[in-house]
Image (cartoon, rainbow, N blue to C red; front, side, top):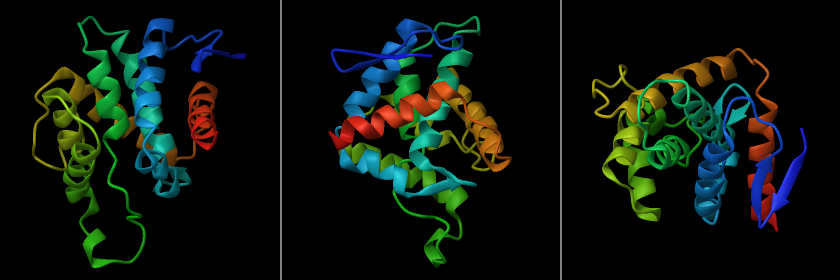
Amino acid sequence: MKLIRANQTLKLKTNPLVSASDMEVLTSCLKNLSASSSFISMKNFTQHGRTDCLFHSISVSYYSLASASRLPFIWDKRSLVKGALLHDFFLYDWHTKDRSHRFHGFTHPSAALANARKEWGLNEKEADIIRKHMFPLIPAVPRYRESLLVCLVDKLCSAAEILRLRPSSQVKTIYLNTIEKKAE
């Protein structure tokens, strides 16, 4: 797989899971969000196993896009990607011993939503994706198909990370390119 850069847009020469147009949606959204040092700081917080929050969020958005393209529905892909990238934008290490982290599973969607709203404008779908991605742990039923898809893909990615299954080389490339661009 060769990485090609054209006008600072990440392009993967071959990509069996995500189409070129979907990849453009993902890279465009990542370019916008990664202009914020807060978004990039997600790499400093462990999420599941040895996976950081930024890598996890990129994985969830990538596999949400891959899944959406295989399902017979019309999707708001920009909202799907942005919501997936920001669903764990809580910006703290929930593994540290702190009373405020005791109920992390229940409280982090609200923290992520508040942080995302401070930094960017969110539409109703994006807010719903972030707020309800922990269903059914939190009894807030996803209102949109995009929310439900991110909720399901988040569970699959979390399980894969905990079990230390090898992540996709596509996701690794996107992650490394995101961090590299911010460093430039």
